[in-house]
Amino acid sequence: MAKKSTPSISLSHFWGVVVFSLCFFVPKSVLGEKKELRFRKNGEFKILQVADMHFADGKTTSCLNVFPNQMPSCSDLNTTAFVERMIQAEKPDFIVFTGDNIYGPDATDAAESLSAAFQPAIASNIPWAAVLGNHDQESTLSREGVMKHIVGLKNTLSQVNPAEVHIIDGFGNYNLEIGGVKGSRFENKSALNLYFLDSGGYSTVRAIRGYGWIKPLQQLWFQRTSTKLRRAYTRQPEAQKGPAPGLVYFHIPLPEFASFDSSNFTGVRQEGISSASVNSGFFTTMVEAGDVKAVFTGHDHLNDFCGKLTGIQLCYAGGFGYHAYGKAGWSRRARVVLASLEKTEQGSWGAVKSIKTWKRLDDEHLTTVDGQVLWSKRHADVSYLSNNVHKTLEMRAVLGCSLLLYAAKNHA
Image 1 (tube, one colour):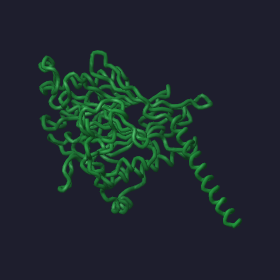
Image 2 (cartoon, helix red, strand yellow):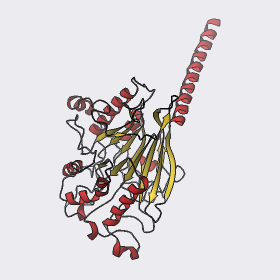
Image 3 (cartoon, rainbow, N blue to C red):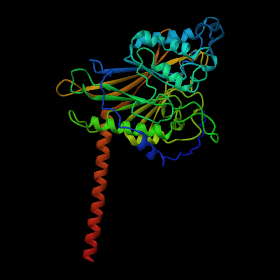
Image 4 (cartoon, rainbow, N blue to C red):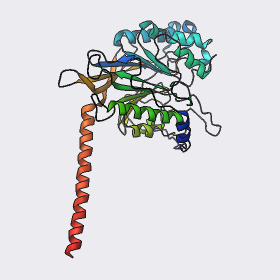
């Protein structure tokens, strides 16, 4: 499929710094007062991503794009059963719902639909979080109302917005920190950082059509939070040379998702990249921050690939819900991410050594597909050393040339 062209209209940031300095406080200390999440005793932390449930009214809501013989018995309850199967099979430490959790136009009561959609996560007693898509607010609750309802549900770590932020665009911008193994030297450090952002619903600018995007104030909050986390991670005790790895979750893919073809991604691309019609520069912001290793989105249900661009993996989860559009014969699916810690010389658990991912299909066997390593500390360290070697050689070459020119000049 030919790549979808995306206009590259940059949004001005010049006023953002002024507003940010007036309206933002410094983020709270690392891990805060309450450490909600941490790595298991085996040095692992597993995240289940559920994208685009499109839940509506339960058993009375029909399925889309399934085989005719499946239609009579297929409803939102198939989506619920899939969530339950995934929780039972993978036993995740954390569940992330990346938007279009309900399909507003077909949800009679938004609050009831939201509660029903998240019920498997609530019942599991596993911590979970959610961001908004472009359909969540199209029922009986506003976008703010939807996020407030989610925050009030049991076991969720979702936030309407950061407590320390007075002004920010959207609802559902926040970060969570994954502490090291209890009793290890990394116990009081955030070994893995999770960022959640509201990618918007639809453009609110009359001259710009299409979907929403991540705005300047959201990006400034992200930059400030990333910097704060880096400083804490590189301080004693157990001072590290660089930042802890970060993962970012939101709904609408960035224009950069269109940078790939079948030769440089893992998974499938079966439809265009439905990003905003403007490029707000958030990908560049993440690259500059230096800690983000992967981004996870939904929105385009028939895409489930991961592709690496400028050191960041851009990943779709693939469509999950049965009331969402799909493709008959192409199984609904979910993405799993596993972060693993390294062993220190003392035999304790240290920093994150690798981040892996795979998908599970909603078939008879919950088939696992497309396992891959998203990031490895070993490769990152080799790259870091290689870059330093190249810089050293370049400096020596420049110095050598300068000395030769100086010698030639004096000789003359």
